[in-house]
Image 1 (cartoon, chains in turn blue, yellow):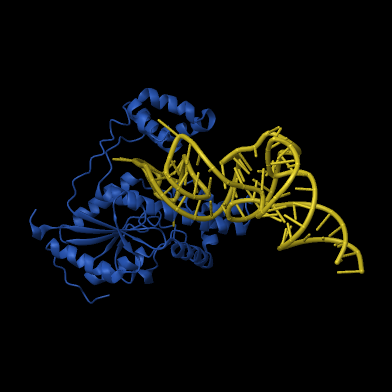
Image 2 (cartoon, rainbow, N blue to C red; image 1 turned 90 degrees about the vertical axis):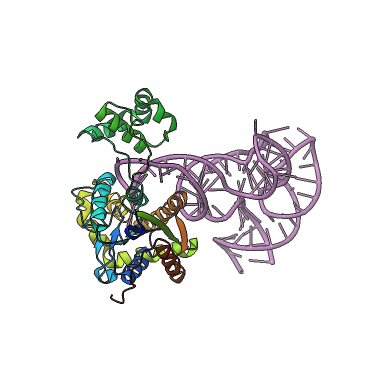
Length: 315
RNA sequence: GGGGGUGCGCCGGAGUUGGAGAGCCGGGCCAGACUGUAAAUCUGGUGACUUAGUCUGAAUAGGUUCGAUUCCUAUCACCCCCA
């Protein structure tokens, strides 16, 4: 690939509420490029307030893709997201050199930049069946099956995590092959390069910001949004901080104060998990507030790659 | 001023009333794992240290005892009652 054909995706990650959107919009405006969202909740058109989806005014005219592009009634898997996003990006990069990929879902970023291994389709009903067995017979029962069917994966999997066990078994039962047989863990070739950075902040300040962000969501009508969606609470996409807690409140399991407290707590815990993920994945860490530094760093990266894009004054 | 009660680890609760535990539950916090449910799911830590272990520890200071979180004395703090 010649230098002129260099394609670059600037991936921006980080914990919830750290300011990913603001920075992305700023950079997108500067280079006059769109933003592709890597967020497993903002992708649903029904989840607005609770997902922290940027408003029209926050987008400032910058085109956003994969925001509100699906419906909670048709859940999108990470695999589907990869397929759609890559198709979109390949097409985009035919005529363009630079894009911003912004979002808090680490696995989505990974699906774009590295790709997921190809797994067979799960036969309808298998997952539900496994869920039933898990509830009735327990994890140990499923573990025994995994040990027999796929000793390799059994040896390395987190055996206390039902999600991992049932995932492996749904693939095994659907394909009659070992789960580990599909786990090549080999990065895919992409038509573009990913530059991965994440924003962070002092923990105390981040948590304060998250707490007040939740207060803002409540003011904006999170409770009503949750109420409308409560009939569909069992959908995977509604297993989400900000909604689940309200569902319990509607049930009378907890009172309003408690629901709010839990939303804040679970948001903080989520933020921590995100930080752990990006550090673990080797992303470059930047201070959320140091835009100047990030700008200069990015300029440098573009120059190195021979990417010459006018900093547009539009916006 | 008099009488009574309570006091342990970041916080709350339970529990031990002479054979002691850096111990139980919850919270908070810290850290980690994670390839199609990922805002999901799961794990570890939270007195100190030279960390497979060692030391200190039940408000503080003494005392009784072979042995004290437990009993005694004083002090401090908080709570209740009486003046």
